[in-house]
Image 1 (cartoon, one colour):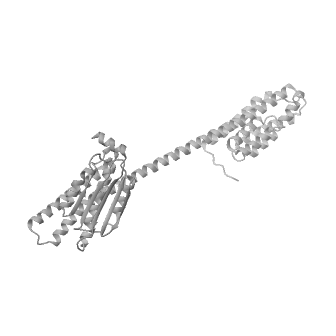
Image 2: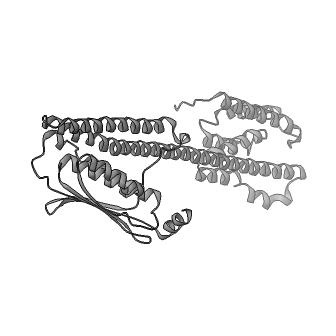
Amino acid sequence: MRRIDRTRRDWAADLGLFLFATCFAAVSSQSVPVVADLDPVWRAADQVVGGLGCAAVLLRRRWPVSLAVVLLLAGTQAHYLTGPAMVAVFTVAATRPWRATAWVAALAFAPLPIFLWRLPELPEGQAGSALTYFALIAGAIGWGLFRRSRQQLIASLRERAELAEADAELRAERARREAREEIAREMHDVLGHRLSLMSVHAGALEFNTGAPRVEIERAAGVIRESAHLALRDLREVIGVLHAGPAGGERPQPDLADLDRLVAEARAAGGRIELTGPPDGPVPPPAVGRTAYRIVQEALTNARKHAPGAAVAVRVTGGPADRLTVEIRNALPPGPASGADRGEGGGQGLIGLAERTRLAGGELRAGPAGDGFRVCAWLPWPAADAMSAAGQE
């Protein structure tokens, strides 16, 4: 036997419907048409059957359809089963599938055509009671259908709310992941540039022990300054991480800072030729920042993997056209030392490709002729250029 677990609310509902059926039978007992010569035993049996029908209401959750069929069939002979029958058909309409509800409704109204055909011959009291019975059964079925529709609507709204909450959580998690990736890219680009400068000068001190004191002091000063700037940049990035969105953003570089970036690389001994950026309108901030990071990472890689090689940086483009950033470096003039060569694992180029893709552009990197080439194409909409020029 299937076990039915009822909550307190379910028990309260079942007891309430049991009291309703009992009270309905008691109140309507005075209006039940009774044949004058009916045997008192049959009359008492009719009342007992009505009481059992009221008690059977407590079984409505276990066998709703069977209970409704039994009460409807017995109700054609017993006059006190109208209340329990109403509860039974209400339960079927509220909890069972549409097909079961349709079959029970068909059974309940099967006597209706015969009743309408014999209506002129029936006494006025019996005709009124029968019409009231069919009206009450129809009302119980209608109320059950309304309750089921309401429950389905509530379940649908609850499901939508849960889906919306899950979607909001996914969006929040995606935003957190993107923020972590952005911070990781920033730390890689900024610290990689600073640490590569320190590595170049430290390597020079290591392999050129007989250098003049002036050059040693100059290299030590660059190492100290690079370490100081690296710590400052690290504090700024971590400060943004701790502050969150409400804490604002750290100042971001753009194309105007390329001269300073190249000057730092030249001070570390690099042979760098810079062409551009183009004069006139400036690209959108996101595009300029992405171009700066591409040049920064390419110079860092050139210092690691091709120390002493010449590097050519070219930035061209204009409004309604793409901004082109190209960095070429030749092969190193001699074999690179293990300290200078470094082990990047290609993560910098992967991060640049992702950063470029997020900006709506395209990046290609690989060997080209007798060196290495990094080339990126970034969008530069004319509307953004005109807006930037108007702000200036």
